[in-house]
Image (cartoon, rainbow, N blue to C red):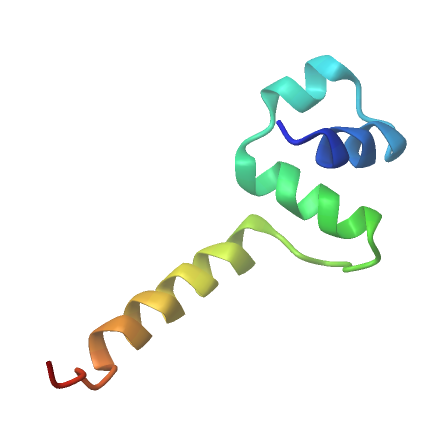
Length: 64
């Protein structure tokens, strides 16, 4: 894990064991909360993935 992310999670009160048990999405949400981006959840990230997928499918293709 990135050192800055690990430091932020520890500062939010997480133990190394709880950090190790986190999914990448959970760790990212906690990292964001440390930096003041509140109420982000793994479901928010899932929506971002969906939007990226929809955007990629509907984006016009560039001519070669």
